[in-house]
Image (cartoon, rainbow, N blue to C red):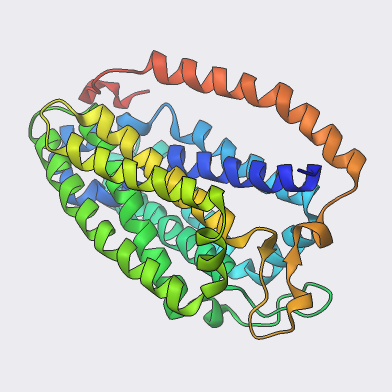
Length: 339
């Protein structure tokens, strides 16, 4: 296992942690207009993520920074070729942040901020999945590693299917979190939404798997042909069964939430194994234009220093994150909106 290979999986891990942590924040935002009906319920929904959403976004910054330092060619291609999509994601995240900060201070525009909260959560939830779909499917590139397609080519049927599947997984994750944090009617609606969105996700996941086997055989062959691929398939299967079991139990809200988190881990692991050793495969252009680990990795010293820094810094961030979640554990009350 080379340093470049280690960093391939570390980058995948950083982005997976981001989806797990900020994913339920985004899911709550997408559900917000549908489950929170009274002013008190809206306060609870916002306050359930109020103290933690900005800290969760740190993992996205860490993942992007790791790509920039470890695989600069990948960073250059994705952040230029996917420029408009990335700007839309950032616009959504900024819109969500502004809406959360202003909603409880500006009563006159509360409907506008409610809509901004929903839209700022929906756009990133959908586009992140679309980006993953393109990374799995492959994109056209030249020998310099520059993207040669258009923005509309990124919105192909396969990537849109992955995007919708990811959206419903994120919404399920958000509903599970809201069920953990809420009480009363809001709690009941969150449980109902969690069940509905989970089964929609399950159907879409089957459709996405079939589409991957039929149209991206390279990825499916890698998964089925490697022990690590079978390991993540087993993790995914156990997590799905465990989540279904917990959804049928009274008081299984937290375990159901943890189950959806493990589902995300299983799917991310399958995607990583399916692409390895390519980070961004080429599609419609010669195979040598693919951005592989060996072709795009930084020098040995850079990767070594980064690994040392990560081994020191990541435990600190994890400890701080655990402390924050412990501090704000328990049910959220309407009065907590003034975080």
